[in-house]
Length: 191
Ligand SMILES: C[S@@+](CC[C@H](N)C(=O)[O-])C[C@H]1O[C@@H](n2cnc3c(N)ncnc32)[C@H](O)[C@@H]1O
Image (cartoon, rainbow, N blue to C red; front, top):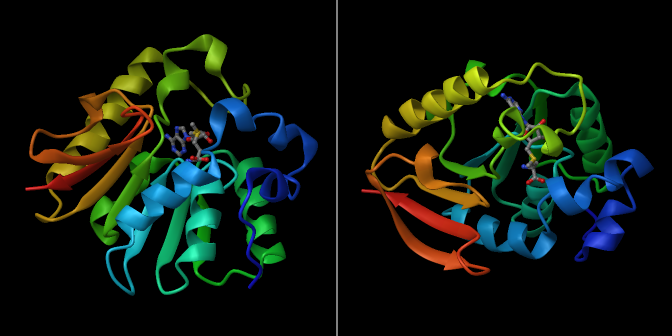
């Protein structure tokens, strides 16, 4: 396994078009590291990134938590391919990427969750990554409701980290137990 500990080196593994999206769409490594530290509760923990992009959160976490598995679900196939290529270049065996719509994924198959405001581009036209997927206000509401329902059903003690989100995705039975970067990153635990 290779270890990289700065954004520039990690992003050098991406093709130019994916690196160009970094500033706005991919988690900075110092944020990913803090979130992964909170979510990696014990050896064997399965951590899901809901909308994993080119995999920055999962790749960072997997490099620093070799005894934990990171799963990225992402519906844009070209982004998943970049993430898989990077995992191979870094020789990581504890990270797994799959091209799927998150609304086909059952969250109870995982233990901890990372969420970087993934559905926002449905309601903010200027924030769209590309035109490869269908986006709409109505889909935004559907995704939001799906994630809320899924999170609600998880066992007490479940951990969630949200970055740049509004809190409407988070059920009331999750409480904030810490923050980072002026509350842009929030750490939640289900009571
Ligand atoms: C803000 S980016 C965050 C990427 C990654 N989590 C990170 O932190 O670097 C959100 C990602 O969620 C993906 N996404 C949005 N809606 C999705 C859905 N319904 N199913 C799967 N992926 C989705 C987008 O394609 C985008 O790559």
